[in-house]
View 1 (cartoon, one colour):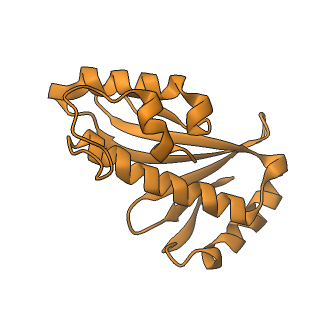
View 2 (view 1 turned 60 degrees about the vertical axis):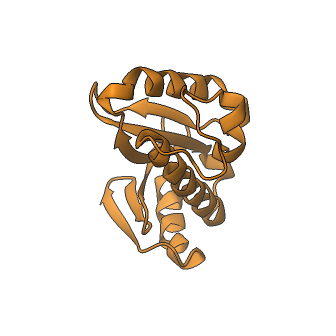
Length: 155
């Protein structure tokens, strides 16, 4: 399966003009660099999935509770978000956005689409993490309801 993924990774660059580069990190791991954000792609052969992730900003100390609550609510809304999950890379570390695709469904076009969508959603999440509200959403003093944010964060 990894050979197939390697072949697909060789095909993705020309499929999206926004891709700056595709870099091999090691065995079955790549970084797809977009101007706004990097997407890490990794094969998980044990589960037959390809994992895509983006590293975003850390939660501000003064808003951690609200941010963590929003991340948990977002994870609960997996049906509405297309299965995208949010995590933390350490107690004070950055927020990480994660999606996976079954290897059996994989194509170069699908990889580009999911990666591009993670980059777009990453921009929205970064605005939230920085205390800014996405342009399409009204200002809120508390975390948004997952059903309200799911429509613009769905893959």
